[in-house]
Length: 267
Ligand code: ACM
Picture 1: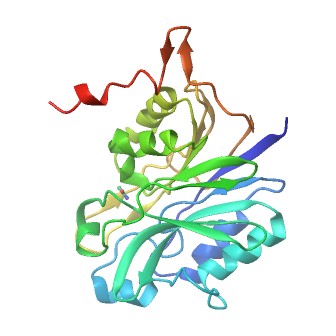
Picture 2 (picture 1 turned 60 degrees about the horizontal axis):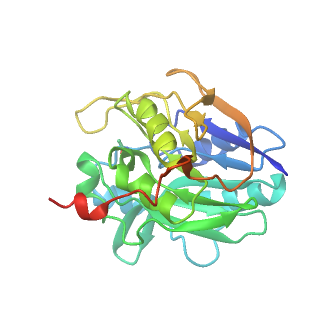
C-alpha cells in the first residue's frame, strides 16, 4: 500500500503583493510531496477593502490560466513537482466573486470548491459557495475541500466524509485560535485525515487589526496531530500517511454513518 506525503504550508502574505506571495508560498513546498495544501486567499492576502479592490485581484478559474497568474504558477508547480496542490484563491465568475479553493493535479487537470460559510466582512465581498461539498479523486484517494470558517459547521466535514472523502483539505486564514482543536474532533467523528494550512502575521486595512493564528497541522483519523507548526513562523508541516479506505465501524455494534439518526435531529 502506498504512503502519501502531505504538507500543510503556512505563509505570511503581504496584502496585494501577488507575485511575491505566490513565489514565497511555492518556495516553502518541501520536495517529494504527494499532496500540498496552501492557505485561503494565499496569493492576495485577506482584507479586501471593497468589491472594486477584489475585482482587481480575483482570477477566473475556468479555461486556460492567464500567464503569470497564481493559477498558472500552481499549475506549473504541480507539473514540476508531481504533487497535487490545493490553494485558496479569490475567484471571478462573470460579475460574481467566490472565496474558492482550487485543486491542481500534475497533469494540469483541476477542480474547485467555493466557500459555503462566509465569515464576517466576506459577506460583503463574495457570494456564498454554490457547489456544495464535492469530493475528488487525487493521489489515489478521495479528497474534499473546506475553507477556514467552514470548520465551525460540523455539517461541512460530515458532508465531505459522507461523500467519501478520506482527507479534508482545509485552506485557512484562521483568526480564532480554537479551530485547530476542533479539527481534531472533526477527524475523530468522521474517521478522516485533515490538513489545515493557515497563515500567520497581521492585516489592518479596514480599521480592524486581524491577527492570524497559524498552527497549521495534519491530523489523523484518531485525532493525533501528526505534524504541526507554531503561531508565528512560516514553514511546512509534513506527515506521511497510509492511503486506505477507513472503516467507519467504530465498535462491533457502532458504525459512524449507519448509526446516524437524522430523523431525531430535526426537532
Ligand atoms: C475565515 O473564515 N477566514 C476566518
